Amino acid sequence: MTSVAADTQNRLQLAPREQMNIVIVGHVDHGKSTLVGRLLADSGSLPDGKLEAVQALCKRQGKLFEYAFLLDALEAERDQGITIDSARCFFKTDERDYIIIDAPGHIEFLKNMISGAARAEAAILLIDANEGVRENSRRHGYVLSMLGIRQVTVAVNKMDLVDYDQAVFDRIEEEYRAFLAGCGLVPQRFVPISARQGDNIAEPSAHMRWYKGPTILESVDLFKKAPPREDKALRVPVQDVYKFNTRGDDRRIVAGRIESGRIKVGDRVVFSPSGKGSTVASVEVFNAPATESMQAPHCVGFTLTEQIFVERGEIASHVDSAPRVSTRFRANLFWLGRKPMQKGKSYKLKLTTKEVGVHIHELLNVIDASELDSSLDKDEVGRHDVADVILETRRPVAFDLTHEFEATGRFVIVDDYDVAGGGIIREVVSDSFEGARADARRRDFEWVGGDVSRDDRAARFGHRAALVLLTGGAGVGKALIARKLERALFDAGRVAYLLDGRNVLLGLDQDIATTMDSGELVRRYAEVAHLFLDAGHLVVSTTNTFALADHGTISTLVAPAPVVLVHIGDDPPHNADLVLPAQTDPEGCVTAIRAMLREQNLVVRPPEPR
Ligand code: GTP
Ligand code: MG
Image 1 (tube, helix red, strand yellow):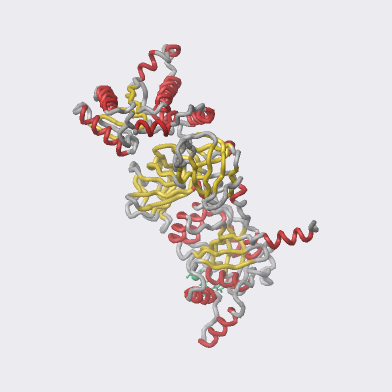
Image 2 (cartoon, rainbow, N blue to C red):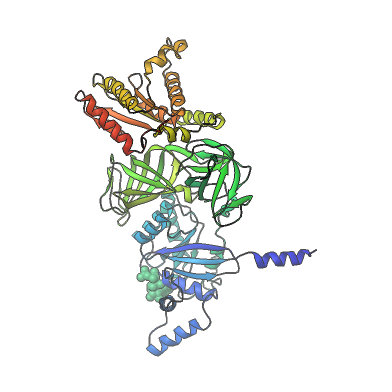
């Protein structure tokens, strides 16, 4: 038996010290390096004798000592290979360890923040009391707000140059607070300091008795730490799905990195955006014995009790805390591409392990990050612009809001194989398919599968299930192409079926044929298609009966089976997979559609001989 005191002692010894990343930003010469040097010195974080050595060196060289020199001295040591990390400085308080991220310029800082290379949890924004709020001070405030950094302390520096005058401080606070409020940022506090003289850094300043708030060191200790990742809701973006190789074993291992939360045997999990549900049968860790549970930030593999079809890019979570799913979200986007990001053009979005086509649905605001000129009537996002946008993905994606979950709330955008931009997700934008999505989720969650899985069928047929929807105006010849496509696929040994919307009307819809409740007609059609797709078919259909807006509902209800949109004639929708000329060569159209099915890896190889 251990005493309570010994127990506490043990825990204190075992608990690793808490760490926090903070960034210091400010206009040129407002005193960033001096403040960092001061923080290192006054918190007692410098190596023994360092301060004295640098002071002595200055004296020998006949120049005035600057706290900023401490950084150069430390950097010189790092260059000798002591540590490789030159972009960071470290200091500690009784409370925790701090890593200061050096932000040489805000473009570099933005790049690092967006790519996830450097992540600041809080910021100190520096303003020179003598110079007041400068353009850059505004820009930095904006950038912090756009990155979702909500914990900000504003340090009004060089108070010694204004005789420690409270009126100067109050004026700056009032002006800057108003500006930050416009960016949606509420700083935690303003602290009047002199980095050079050491006022209000570690000790309350004798020169500013009128200031009753915390010092800079106290104020960083007041920043709140986000709860540890393992305490948050479960998020495992699926990296891969492996099959057991032994014969007769149809189990699969779902592999991925736990970004947050904990997964354990017996957990009921749901995969988003497909909405498929199952129960965790085992948790496996690479090169280690199987375990009952595993938590963030580790990589795991897990098997499921029911064999469901899940794909790379889905996010596993617990049922009651699933991520959001939509085809639209509002984001802060930062563009680095040489070519501007254009409205109407398609790009590739990468969000955790998911890759999906994306385009700008609405451009709400574009701000030139180097000039901070805001422009409301731009129709593209230029290099180094920051934009407030609503993005639309080709298929539904699962995600979180950045301020709730870091890893599943940020994305990058690829243009011509290059990462050209990135951003953070701020809100879900409803995409009018929410109702259908919830219905499909409920349905899929309870779905009773037989012993033949979708994969078994795909393996036998040599193709996956897909709905090929032919769209186009009246008289473009899509019905003829659809018939010929079904025939050609069938003749090639494929399991293909022409589903004419009219046949659903004639039979299943008899009871509502008079009322013609269009929402219900779409739903029933999609549910019929879903059954054929579940049976592994290539379903060919034309959509005379439905408006274009209904396609989204259909896609939502048949997901994860893909809908392949083939448009015949003019005015193709932006998400068409293939556009073919009207009324020309139906055979040629069929050939083109079949080639595209192969290209999209839907039709893979000849069917298995039997
Ligand atoms: P850049 O890295 O060039 O953007 O500058 P910085 O923000 O790192 O400023 P730095 O710390 O190099 O300080 C710039 C000048 O301001 C130096 O000459 C400092 O000595 C001076 N300085 C910094 N803090 C204070 C202060 O509290 N009072 C006074 N009087 N001067 C200060
Ligand atoms: Mg500096």
